[in-house]
Length: 169
Length: 123
View (cartoon, helix red, strand yellow):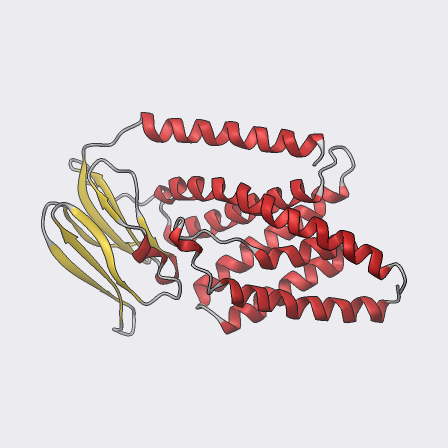
C-alpha cells in the first residue's frame, strides 16, 4: 500500500473516531456507574495498529483526542482524555512490539482499557492531590475489563474484514 | 483468545478480588467530618450531621457545584460539568468509603475522621 493511500485511510478513520467519541457522549452509560464508558472510539486506533502500523495508530489517536476535545468538554476533561488515550495506545504499541508474550486483539484491548484508567487515575491524583479517588478507579477498572473485551471483539472483526479488503489495494 | 489473554483476565480478577476484600474488610465508621475540596484547597469542613447547602464558585464567581447535606447524607445537587457524573454518584454518609468527585470542576467531597486536625490532602 502506498503512503498516500495510508494517509487517506487514516484521515477517514480519524473522522470515524471523532464521530464515535461524540456519539458515545450521548449514550447514558453513567446509569451503570458514573464515569463508565464503552470506549468505542478506541476501536479505531487499535484496528489501525494492526492494519496500518503503530505510527498511524498513534497519530490518529492524537488527532482524534485533540479535535473531540475542542468539540466537547473543558480543559480538564481534555487532559483526562489526552493522557488516558495516549498512554493506552502507546502501551498497546509496545506490548504488540515485544515478542515474548503474545496477546490477541482482545487481550491488547483489555490492556489498553486498564492503562487508560490508570493514566486517568494518575491525572486525577495530580489534579486533586487526594488518594481517596483510588477506590473509585478500582471499581471503574472492573468495568474496564468488560468494556475492553467488548471493544476488543469489535476490533477483531473489523481488522479481519479490513485486512481482506486492503489486500487488493 | 490466546492463552496470554486468559492469563491476563485471571490475574486481573485476582487483583480485583484483593482490592474488593481490602475495601470491605477495612471499615471507617468514625468518619463523620465532611470535607469539600476545590482546586486542592479545603473549602468546607463540618460534621456531616449538620444540614447545609454549600455553593461552590469558580475563580470568576460563577456557580459550578452545589453540595446538599441533609440527614447525615451529602450529595451533589448541581453541577455545570458536561456528563453530570458527580450528580449521578448518589450520596456519601458516615461508614462509606465513597467520595464524590466532579473532575472537570476539580471538586471533591469526602469524609474523614473526627479527631484528625491535619487536612486530608496527600502530597
